[in-house]
Every structure is written in C-alpha cells, then in structure tokens.
Image 1: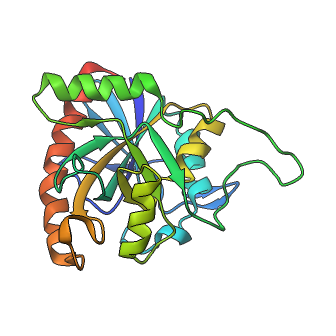
Image 2: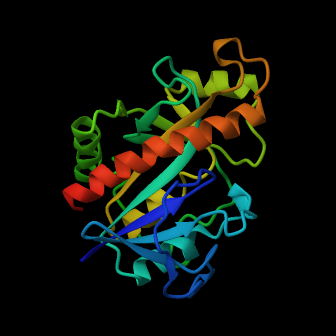
Length: 245
C-alpha cells in the first residue's frame, strides 16, 4: 500500500475514517504539531498531520514546519498534498473556488527554511515549487469527477497571524499573486529538500482585503465557506486516491 501524506490546515475534512496514531511527534528538529495519524482509503494509506495541532493552537508563524515534514518523512510517505484555506485576489479565485497553484512568492520572515545547518548549506532547485506530475494527477481526478479547479496560479505566503491590509493585497496583485495564505512556506521548500513530491490544494474562503469592494473580512462567513468547501476538497482527494498516487 502506498502512503500519501496530508497536511491539513484550518479546514476539517468531513471523513469518518478510522484514524489511529502512528509514529511520533518527536523528531530531530523538535516536536511536530502532533503525532501523525494513519487511515486506509481505497488502496492508499493516508498519513495526516494537522499543521496547527489538535486542538488548533499553533499560529502560522509558530508552527514547527521542519518537524512536521520530518515526521511525515519518517512515515515514508510517497507524496504530500497540503491543504490551504486562502484569500482570493484574481477574478478566477472566487470564494469557494479550488486552485492548484504552480508558483509561490514567500513574504514570510524568521521561519526555519531548511533542514541544513547554517554551516552546511545545500542549494535546491526551486524553480517550480510544486510537483508537476502530482498537480496533473489532481487536475485529472478533478476532471473525472466533475469538480471545477483553477489550474495554476501564484500563491502568496504572508507571515500572519493577522490578515493582510488592502494596500498589501494591492501589492500582491501587482506581484502577480492569485491567492494569499499564511502556511505554504516553508512546507514546499522542505518537501523539496526531502525529495518528496509535493502539491497544494487551495480553497478560496474569502476575497482578500479590498478585493471586489470588500471593506473588511467577515470571519464567520469565512468559516462557513471553509466548512462547505472542504466537502468538495474531500471529493477531489477521494477521486485522486482512487486513481492511485
């Protein structure tokens, strides 16, 4: 059975799988947000980590991303899909849409970006931060089950935990970003260092500040969209898993 790593964010997948703890939260890079959990789905073994912990408590800038990725690597996952709830910037990134990003811009600071020690630098090719084969499989699964996805786009990754100002979103738009979230980096870079194929599914839960006349972000509406949208995400993941990793 192949193993698929899942990094789950603020949205909850509406699955009734029998998740059991496996492995350990303790890694050589410190404690992960939680010990990995495993469950069988079709012919795949899912290995899940909730990046914010259980219960939800770690802010985006306070997550030990290195430990989370190390914990998944210790479980010998064949690929990783990260789920992100994001704000929409471009017209196609409408509320409720699913977007499969093909690029990112990292606006964060102070996060440990590498597994390497400061005196043992290793340069990785990060021209294309997401695995093309994994993305194509996700898109094909979406097409097969009739789920609309936006193929490609730049994800902006900001520091958080606050949301962005309207002026900051205007800058992100000028930089060519389609969506904005807080947790996409350094996950993608760390997965590349580990040579584990990595892709992201972005669920747009609100217009980013100032987009489409949005004066403020309605947090209650954001949470309601996230709950509804995760049903679609779960359908996409099921279709993907049924095709095999």
